[in-house]
Amino acid sequence: MDGIRRRSNICGITGLSAHQKVILTTMWRQLPRSLVFDLGKRVFQIIFERDPKLLIVVNLEHLQNTDQWQEHVNFRTHAQVNF
Image (cartoon, rainbow, N blue to C red; front, side, top):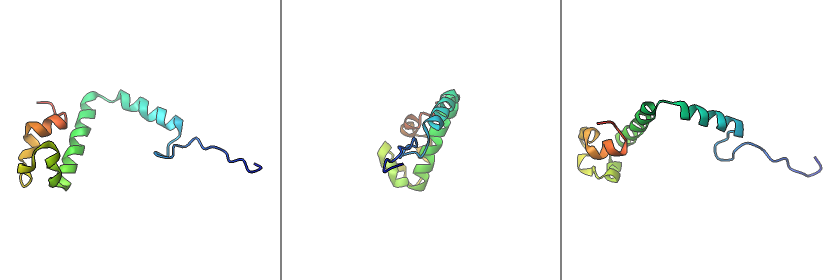
């Protein structure tokens, strides 16, 4: 190619092609909202279970050694859990 470097269409951050990104975006938008909220809740649960010190981020540091933070309004608001 005579010293000309061909530009890749692969994203340097995600490693996905533009076509793959379109497919993922389309599928993500078709997911039911309840599933998206459930995924968000699970992410927060996993993060706080692995490192309870992070409960300080949602002002629940006083509940670090309990399971009560899962029912607290601050957790439910940040995880967008339906009441």
